[in-house]
Image (tube, rainbow, N blue to C red; front, side, top):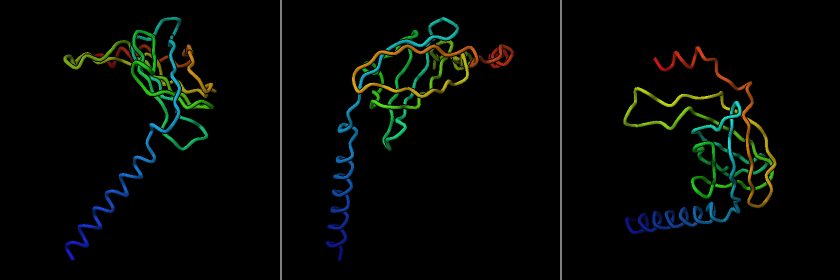
Length: 144
């Protein structure tokens, strides 16, 4: 009985591994995306962008914003082409883990939009509208 049980678990482990490899993200064609993000006509110092495909049931892409620029080839995961729901978050600076008393603060409320990406490498610039601004009294109060 112990041999049957051990064989079953080996088979199950191999089956799960085969499924995981078969559904690997490596089989999904992703496309590089680069560009810039501005808010109030200024480059966003730090943040992130996520893009989730609207019609596909697969994980989306993401990219970090650094000094107003982003590139999925540098840090992130590309888009799949087609319509995506995009979420942009921006901060006044990079966080410093050595100084938890002075965290990076959001520059604006998360900005959401839908974008049609081409099925190829693309460059895109995002301007976050002023309607996403966070009131200055809330931002100043958060630093205290």
